[in-house]
Each structure stands twice: as C-alpha cells, then as structure tokens.
Length: 385
Image 1 (tube, rainbow, N blue to C red):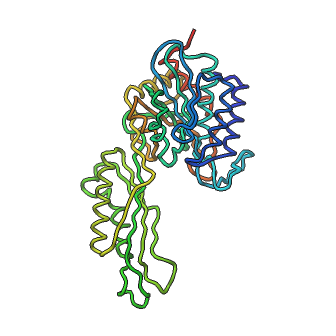
Image 2 (tube, rainbow, N blue to C red):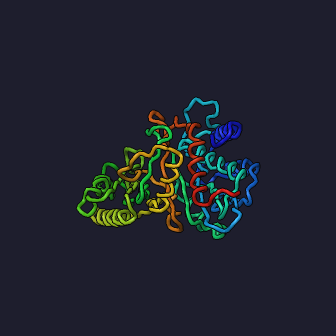
Image 3 (cartoon, one colour):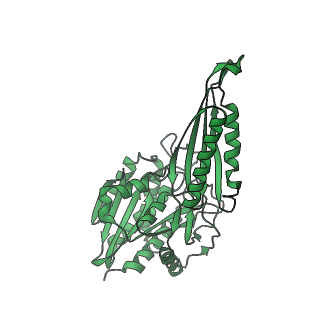
C-alpha cells in the first residue's frame, strides 16, 4: 500500500465529512476552509486562499529548480437532494456531492500526506482545490486571479470518476477529451390579448414551436452533419397559466454541445441566425445569451504520455477510448496556459450515474487516484534524497 492504513482511514473519514456538508458553485467557503485546516497537518510550504473565489492552492517545493506540476480537483457539489442511505449523507437540504468531487478532493489530500513525507527532488507541486467547476466559471476565475501568476504551471493533471466502468479502470486519449458546451437562452416578446380575440395580440407560440424543432435539428444540417454536435432542449415556457389571456412571452433554453471549440462556434452562429430569422418572420422581439460556458478539454500529447507511463508503472488497466466524453469540464481552461491532460477512473459498473440523487463516490478509489498522481510527480520531478 502506498498510503498506510491509518492515513487511508483518516482520508476516508474526511471524505465522509466533506460529503455531509456540500456547497454549490461559488459558495464553497466552508469546504475550502475544511480542506485548508485538514492539510495543515501535512506541513505545506505555502497555502494560498480565496483563489478565483474560494479556491485553495497548497504548494510543496522541491529542493532544486524545476517544472511546476499542478494537480487539480474540485470543491463544489450540486443543487440536488441526496436520497442515499449512507450514515454520512448530505445534511444540507437541496445540495449534495453527487458527482464525486468530495472523493477527488480527498485523493489530492492524500498526495499532501505523501509530499509531506518526501518532497520532490526539484520543481514544485501545486495542489489546486478549484471552485465552481459545475457552472464552468471556476477554472477561468482561478487563472485570471492575480495571485495565480506566481503559480504558473508547466503541466496540469486532473481526473474524474466514471460510473459504468469497472472499478479502477482508466480511460484516456490524446486530443479532445471532454466536449465543449454552452447554455443558450432565448426570449421571444410579443403582445398579450384576450383569448377570445387572439388576432389582437402577437403570440410567440408558433415561433417557439418552430425554434424547438429547428434547434433540435441543427446538428443534422449539411455544415454540421460530419461533426459531433448536439442540441438539447432543456426548458420551454409560454405565457402565463391563464385561459383568458393569449401569450405574449416565451422562453427557450437549449444546451449546445460539440467535440471542438470550432464546431461550437459554428453551432452558435447557426443558432443565432435561426433565432433572428424566426423572430423577424413572426414580428417578435428576440433576445438571447449564454451561460454555463465550457470550452472543450483537449489532452496534450506529451501530458497524455506522462499519464500513460504512470498507469503502466502502477499496473493500472487502461481501456481504449474511441471519442471524447460528452459531458463538459472547465479543466480545458488549463490547456490554454500549459500542457494538460485528464483521465477517467472507473467507479463501478453498477454505480449510479453522475448527478443521480443516489450517487456516492466509492472510497476504494481514494488510493488509486492518489498513487497515479504521485507516480506522475515522481516521474517528472523525482523524489528528494
């Protein structure tokens, strides 16, 4: 065992504590403080708080100059009620660690215990506990924080647990790894009327129906059909719940998803053109905008090779991937500033899916994730004598 049983028990108990007190994106103040207090026992050389919000950077310095390696995990939970029956289930109504970020944090905390025991021979390690991954805002805010300038990494690595795959099984590929996604909202403004005289109003009903159909069909148009693109209608609202009034307002929300940022740009342009055309045809005022913006995560070739070497050194099974994960990850922002790569770690074939109300991160993965990251650090920076 890389982690002795006492340390592993301590990390498991800490994971359960984090699970009981989830905080959603942008609200991770107490979670960040819990992590900072827990890691003080492992004597980091420096702790930077409130990075890009409630982000936390924990730094271990090597004895000689060398590269900086950033290992990133996420602080935030989800606005979902947990229905699990574990004794450590969420105590916060409407919030839960139902994506496994509590487990990711504890894996990285396990690294701190090992780095305290043996510092790297050179360079430095930055353990980043990042806020606001779930809404896509956290990585960008961390990178843009002035305090991040002194942490500029040469390499960045991360993982995400993946239900439906065998426990401990790794998934990785170079190039596109997580899809880009953006939440497109659209409002259509017309004019209400008495329901007995709909001709006196300007209802957006037909325009909304047309948008719902045509937006869903955008990926099948000639300039997108050869690329992976997906448009998913997630919400639609028309007028008020009143039988005597024709609707004067409509709102549509659609998630746009693509394998690359270039395809996302095409998807946005086609969507915006369609919105303007439909609004003009029905003589409506249209507004639109974007939220939850995630760039595609692109695994660097060299960084992917470093991870593959670590898997080989640790004897971990790697399953081939034929395409990127459909879900999005704001870890892609780190690929803009350094060589970065992430991988999936199987959390069980019968495990409830991510964001399900009964999901619970399997504690058996704690040591696996920790030892992969530790092997990456040793392979690049070496252990001190």
